[in-house]
Amino acid sequence: MAGRANPSPVDHPLRLERVEVAVRPWRTATLVVAAVAAVELVLLVVIGGALLARSEPAAPAAKTRAAKAVAAKTSTPKAAARGNVAAQADLPRRKVKVVVLNGNGRTGAAAAAASRVSHRGYRLGVVGNAPSHDYPRSIVMYRTGFAAEGRRLARDLGVQIVSPLDGIRPRQLSGAHAVLILGA
Image 1: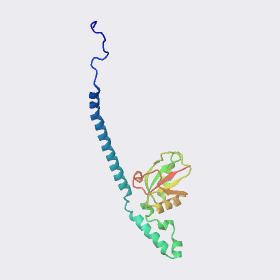
Image 2 (image 1 turned 180 degrees about the vertical axis):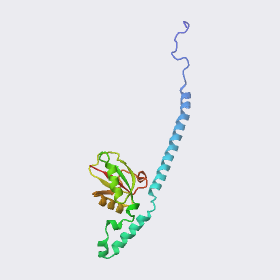
Image 3 (image 1 turned 45 degrees about the vertical axis):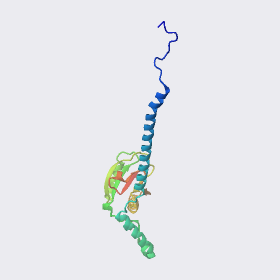
Image 4 (image 1 turned 90 degrees about the vertical axis):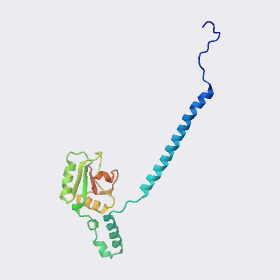
């Protein structure tokens, strides 16, 4: 070592040309993978949009309700005055399935309400607790196509707030037509 006049800190320096050649295949592969991912994303968005745009076939009850609404508009005023919410409901109470959820946190509230619902002639679905216990008032929510049944249920139970499903997906209802969430 004494014979060396100027020792180099690197024994084998790399040439810049070789480094650039080694990096290029990775850069190309990354660009190809990103392009494939972008094409897949575009295809998923197009397919998802097509599925969302495709309308569900209307339920037979909804078609019947629409026909009744047209008939009510074209009928005489006396016939329209006789029709009420209960008359508009296509399903009898014994065929309407109701989910009862405790939204007030009181122990046994859902079971007591389920008993009232059952005594009114409705079928019971799931009886349990709502995701939160901070509902200030009771509410009846109904699945699409079953607004008349939801209004009739609310009237039968003395619930003043009635709305379409909000925050609950129809598949979470296990086939039920309406949901009663108990409030304070």
